[in-house]
Image (cartoon, rainbow, N blue to C red):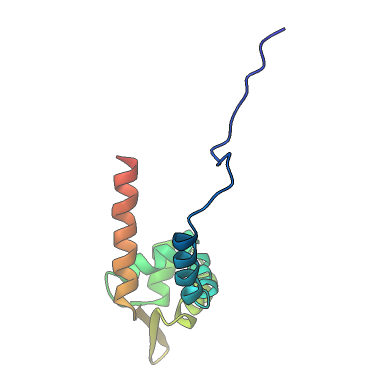
Length: 126
């Protein structure tokens, strides 16, 4: 019969805590608590490859819905739906030119954050 291997989990085996540190951190988290659901929603929207591709495509400049659709290889309806979601967050602006609808990135800080995330990912994979 093979020997049983005991696997210990990475948790404290003694119940104790630094009261001042815990109180300080809890107070900081309480300040941010109202924004956490909004931040989770932001990550949920950005957790979609199609929407990320749209943002990265529009980082190159304004595009009409048809152009975005061709870049992604999606139908115009599917593309419009994704653009609407991104626009509802205030990340894109839209303008009409006759029958054409054009989109552009409205929030440059979002693009900076995405580029920073790419750098982080590349470092992690290196």
